[in-house]
Length: 238
Image (tube, rainbow, N blue to C red; front, side, top):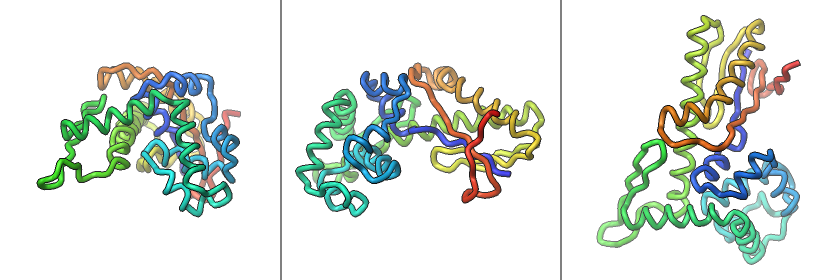
């Protein structure tokens, strides 16, 4: 039976950690559902579309792109409308906006970005032109996605060590973006559930032990199980 552990809003958590945006961090601590907030505020048709909105906006998506995207056709589609939504979002999370601007400026001035985990990204310039080959959208993507990758890797390694140390039959199969997939016999499900909780609770401390900087945000996951991806059900402790 498959067990899937999915990080909750990992890109958003990473964006807030990198920017140390006080408003966003407090919302996470208060367990505010950012996707529900955006869905209700803008009148988006589904939670899935609300997720698309958030991910696009933190990766420098433009008002033009929103206005032309069929996924957002149920919302007023003018470029001016979407620019106002973007401005309102960054008016609220202004420290995130500052971080994104700072990152792009540093990339342009130095041609590189150094992550809190020690990853160094080098951005090349177009020959003969003081202009980076990568777009602003792609440069915004690197810090957040790379940090998310390193956090998932920490969780995967910690969970794998638990499986080995406790001589469990459960096998770690793979990671898929921000989720970890295991194959587990039914008699081990509850123990695996407890171990996963243990791993997530310890991730901020493990991050500091591994990389140095403190991680001042909680990391949460959703656990589901099923015979295949299509038939997955949320796992409840009772």
